[in-house]
Each structure stands twice: as structure tokens, then as C-alpha cells.
Length: 176
Image 1 (cartoon, one colour):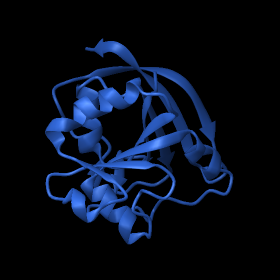
Image 2 (tube, one colour):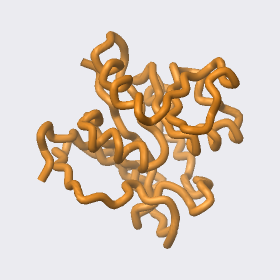
Image 3 (cartoon, one colour):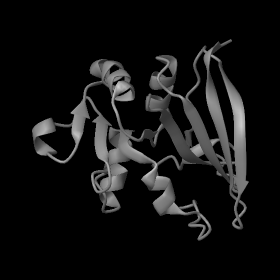
């Protein structure tokens, strides 16, 4: 079964972006092998705001992978290179993707989509690149909710920039 992996950079105080969505504070560490990272996945899941940010950076998300965007407002006919999914159909689609043959699935971007897929039991692993910066405010990695999820440590990687990548598996049935 393919795994859904939430992989995201986060400030030391728990934010994945500035309040306006900017992520200009994330250093491009030359020791990080982006080709190897991207080669692990053939599908990317993201919310509309992440998709919009990627498009302003010159990548609509469809360059390297099958891109699936969760949105209540985007019109699928306007975006032929991506799959637009309404929230209510998302869990079933992700469950089906996990059963298909292929590489792992990258869940990228905001915490709202992460929270909804985590609550549905559809996230298998969490990779958090802790960036040595305190933003003080911004978009949290995980919006608050009454559910606690247990994780199991897998490993860590330290980079010259001070980034520490932590890898955890989501413990099946690990709700506390």
C-alpha cells in the first residue's frame, strides 16, 4: 500500500508560513537532495492556498507529479493539468489512491488539509523539517482539534543550515 506522507518545513515555534502564506524564511540548504526527495512521490495532495502559492512561484504543482488540489472554489475545467476535488470527496479519493500501485503520496502545505486527512486515518507518516527561526506568528503546522494522534519516531537528519528533519510514522489506531 502506498503511504501518504505529510512533509513540511516548520519554524521552531510551530509555523509553516507567515500570516500571508509566505515561506521566504526557509533556507535552501544545498545538502538537501531535492531530486531524491521529489523522486519518492508520484502524486501530490494540496489545498487551494498552497496551490495558489505554488502557481505564483511558477509551479502549478503539475510539473513532476499527479497533482490533486482540494478546493471548494476552483473550477476543474479551468485547470486541466491538475485534479480538483471537493472536500467531501477527498477522503474517499485519498483512500483509493493509497490502494493503487505507485510511489508514495506527498501531502504538502497547510495544516487544515493535514488535519482533515489525519482525522480520517489517511496520513501514514509525518516529516517535519525544523528551521532554526522563531516567526512569532503565522499559519500553524496543525490547527487545534480535540484529537491527539500518537507518532512513532523513525529517524532524523541534520543539515549544515541548522535544519533538522524529523521523521515519524503515524501509529495505526494511535488516537489517545
